[in-house]
Image (cartoon, rainbow, N blue to C red; front, top):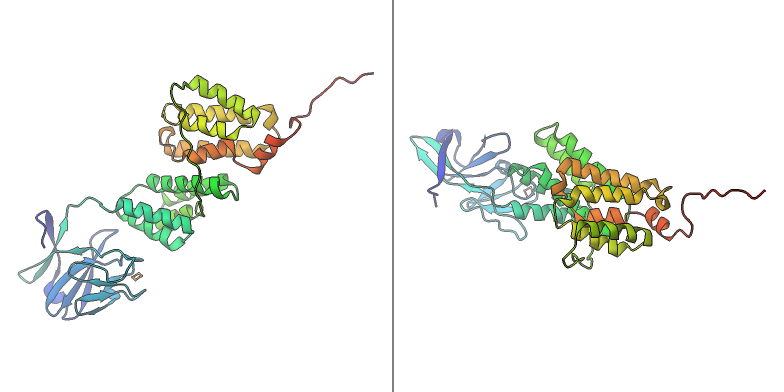
Length: 332
Ligand code: FES
């Protein structure tokens, strides 16, 4: 059905598309339309296969169904429905023939599949599946989603990954993500997608379930949180620190103060000698300066870095002696 909102544009002459033939028409940098002549009727679809983006003009058409040449997904040319399970439908466009010219209707649609594609990215990260990660990012880019939002999904996933699975230093992964995004911003098109997908891939990995941490019931002032974090840091009470920080995160004004407090805690003398803690703090600062303090993407990443970041911190926590040497006056 032709939408009332569709704005029609001319894309080809009817004679450009021979009977049984196809034609690709570029709409802009990111979009291309596929035109199919099936028994004299013209169909118009997105030329990118919804599976992995292969050009559908290179596919095979039979009985009004196009089959992608790459992995064999089949789509109804009229409505775009996919005939395989677990595959998105194909975008189709209304077609009008006007005096031997082919016009297609482009709706003034907002991008409606953003949530679905963000979820696809998260699934790709969970499975460390670089194809799915790249596909999701490509779709999000085509929908005009800014790289900051893509990075926030990656950081939230990383927070859950490192808190439940441990493994190598999260700080390195955060740096890889941020540096990858900076590289991506220097490019356009496919190069940008490659750099962004590589950056996101650095944060991928399995993630398990965690007991949810609830904020403390009110009243809780910043002064109280600050004091308790210092005490829990000295007393090695990791869950207490996490609950305090989560409570502080309820108020955006606290984001800057949280980082300052954490720096002060890791610079206490009983943590000196464990420079990884300071490195972790630097990674957190990097996130805040890149995404803004109010948009800190992952409480889990924050609390993990702060309270249970590394083996080094745990060693410090259980060290029977202060990590700094104590000087005593010798008896002579
Ligand atoms: S890219 Fe079309 S089926 Fe995979």
